[in-house]
Length: 290
Length: 226
Ligand SMILES: Nc1ncnc2c1ncn2[C@@H]1O[C@H](COP(=O)(O)OP(=O)(O)O)[C@@H](O)[C@H]1O
Ligand SMILES: [Mg+2]
Image (cartoon, rainbow over all chains, first blue to last red; front, side):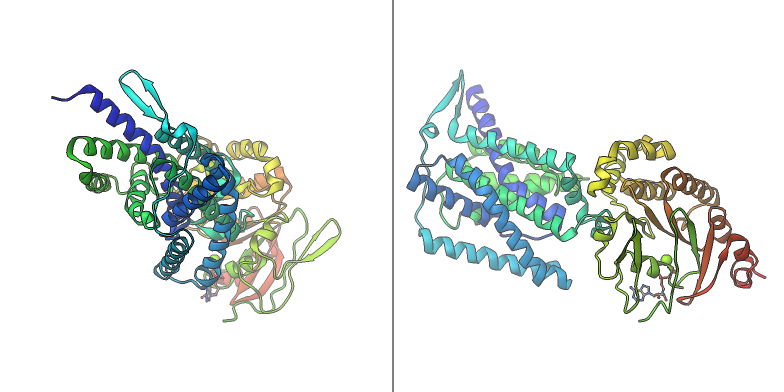
């Protein structure tokens, strides 16, 4: 017999975790989809954001969301530096994307090792008064531990969506990989545009990192666990589509949550990829791809 | 490889000048050199504005665009995965153009009502004629003083070429543009030109008014088949 309680709670938990998945995947969607840059180190930037959040929270008692906001400009600058290095050593030389992949593998290992050296391999978690509480809506129980990350993820996605749709910089970012020479003929500097876009991608990682450490304990290798899921969300939504990433993340969140509830957690990542393959077979551009 | 040899051309404000030549003679290379896309080995490109002379050599395309010189490239170079509207908004990227965005946009839709009907269509899914209209309109969105148009007639049916030339002339007059247009299509181009040059193997072989161009031996040889 199917219990309505169980079903509803699973769906709600799925939607909430989906908002968080969106935050983690946004940067991948932007950098892979709009810049054609294979930044596989993205999940590690997320983990770095988590550790910064953990550090500032445990030492100074700062609220994790506040830390996420403070980190965004810092990560934007870091993203700029990473892109400029990538540009000078690879893109400018006309290197194939595969060689760029090696660069980002390097970045990935560098970050992981730095985290292990600095923080060790123990699990870490943040604290905030509201994290243990929950909102009781009749039969559905909404914990703030999931609700706050969901809310922030949705806000981040919405903000980015309007940035791309309504601003000159946003539109330039959408056009830059389609024809960067044509973009320079519009009076924009393509390298600068890409640098800003990459910076934005990395800035979203810092906030996603803050959300991650609110939801579950982190350890340095956690990033790897997220790589698959993050790509599934970005590709499912349609690479380059911010709105798509949010919808895909919520769909995937619900699918995973239902699977975990009814068949056991071990099945849930299999479900994500099964779902991904199914959608790609029907719509290769993803749900919202152009 | 050296493509252009001792090329010297000039334009004064408000003129429509055409650069005629068949395939592979260096028309696009000259336009690209002016725009900073191809660096010249030697020589100068002087832009005079309000009594100040600036050498454009060594400047990047975006810097040149920001001075009010815009190019409609060969093959249109639209953003195929962006909509008509998004392409037009991108045309207005430069600061000076943003202030005139609404006015320029409604002007573009007035000259090319077709684009207004297709605002939300992806640029890459439109016909060749519509794409060329969009390329021209996108250039207009940048509020240029000087417009460089590289072979707008390529791949278009004669009736469309004729309409396009009329639109270029209309825009030039309404917006006080100075136009340099390359063309292979002699008869269509001379309809809107004040004067022109003929380029052969990277050298300017002839310069003159429309009338002079029409009576020229090179033109007869190249275009009129005599
Ligand atoms: N990227 C390039 N590299 C080398 N040669 C080129 C390149 N582009 C054009 N050329 C050569 O320059 C000459 C002029 O080309 P182009 O300016 O495109 O002519 P047009 O626009 O008059 O058809 C041609 O002989 C062509 O082969
Ligand atoms: Mg050409």
